[in-house]
Image 1: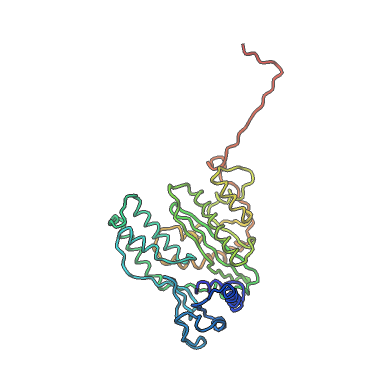
Image 2: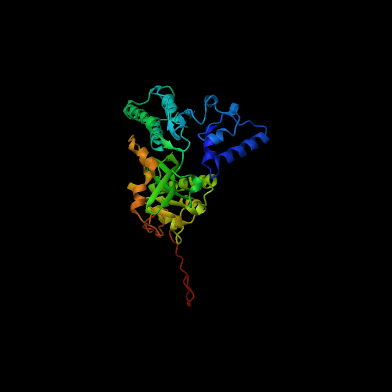
Length: 368
């Protein structure tokens, strides 16, 4: 229930108004809205005490310290107004069933910790490459050390705090709402991540909205195709953001670190094979090519969601976004560069031109 409360509170409306409207709507349908939790006393006072979360019923909302609310391993600290993770430290057996249980126990709907969850998924796929691996059979010893490193890295999550608010100022106080979406891919994973952007002169703030990281499909395909799939993934999360936060599509900018994909998106002269053509069409159906820009690989936050590493410092980079790059690149938000196709003569995704010649002669041809 607190997940619904969090969603409503992040909407560009007054929280109390949203709750009252929702409560009235649910009551009209004979549905009881209960187990309510909020860090705003005015919201809590809009409901009957018996409808509050169990550990809030006996509290004085205005004076007492508020307890954390938990949904699986994801917790909301009402007092600090931050999200965190409290994971079970129960050791699982080193078998396919135990490894799968460990990987799936990370409940992270907005992918706050995608750089670590994708590592577990990739490792699980490597361990189970052989189709005949039994669910309760010991997994190969060659992966045991890497698995231990990954499970140990989960201990860092207990120190991770993600502000519930996108930015220090309220969402409704932003004069102009802009979203920056970054995409990247590797041979093993594709990733997209989005941030809410706010700037006042040289003061720039980014607020993590959501990310998405997926294991790359098998059999392996080319890197340009995977990067194009990552671009499509960026569009998919942009659609969610547009619909849920009421942000116009023309206020969403996209960034990728591969110029081949930008050439595909900006192309107006060549025709592509079906795989590329369908995905370019999907991208352009949401936003024109002018909203796609280049970012160096070492500055691209989406790069963190495509690597198999247990470096906890990546969480900060993933959640913070490329603040330093935006400060140093004066035109990073207002780029208007045209991107051409990269070596179209050698690109196998481009359909080759077919030249047909017509020859006319005044002298009749003789076939004898």
